[in-house]
Image 1: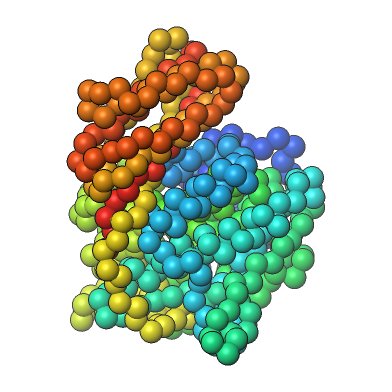
Image 2: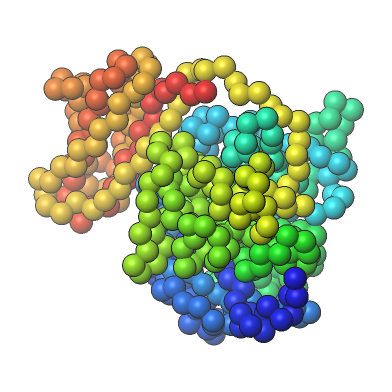
Length: 447
């Protein structure tokens, strides 16, 4: 494929995609309109810096929604991140560590980075161990998305394996200049200047900021060999504090998949903005004006998996003569590896979670949400709300009131017993204007 001719014909439409917040940061450096957080989807606007030896990179991102219950503006505390991480690991049924392959540094690899601007407190000592867990959740999306009998794992940068074949994910801790967290372009420029500029690396950056949910680079190139997304240029992905470590969907997996080359604009079921339309799928949602998705693969589990029906951008066993046999298939990325197949675990009782959020509209207003455990056990409900005025949380099992708590502060945590199949209802009450997030954790049977 003649890449030069294609770039001239396509006006160099490399994309940067992801989920961004609605509010632009204060004191942001001068950037193009497309690089401002919250800008609506647009195409053809240059985003700096672009590769010096290749086609220009363009920025495309908008005010896309974060995972349910997540808030882009919420700077989660260490204790909140730890609790959410525990729930995410259980919900994904993920391994506790990432996989080891090769020397840990050879070939094309994904480099994990904890980054902060110099005017932001350093929390690396507490967050780096969690990044290792979030990376395991991310890798589980690749493992579980492979066709039966095959597997894909991420080629992370890690320590040299010990005698037992164990390794530790390498997480670089990087302090950037003030303002380097204001925009994606500023982050890329600062990382590039700090030496993170190798085409053999995808840099996945956990940025301790609250500007975006997630954002990443993607080149529109469908060539099956020498693909621009496969080690030709340095590429970056960024996930901010409010969206770290979720499972349904896993934002880190979503942004890394963009870096690997999904979703191309000529693939089946593609959206106009680098995503897909056949839900449920980590990469599929209504990502712009007039875009409509169709649920083809039902079940919440599919929200953490790639390529519903394995026909658009990722398949370890594409159908003969299909699109993915003649166009770029991210499952063939050199940043992934076909490690030994791990059999599905026996069904066990684990923990799932659900999040809801809102704003009180009247003084007596209540919000009801139901969860139904699929195994006997306990349901933990955590309510976080703004302000220090009293809030109220009532928990019902069917029509039976289990607990009724009024508390001053900004958090109520309750645990109640639950029977399989019995709806658990949480009712929230607080003053008008109070913002709230309700998080439930309950036992489920997982395979």
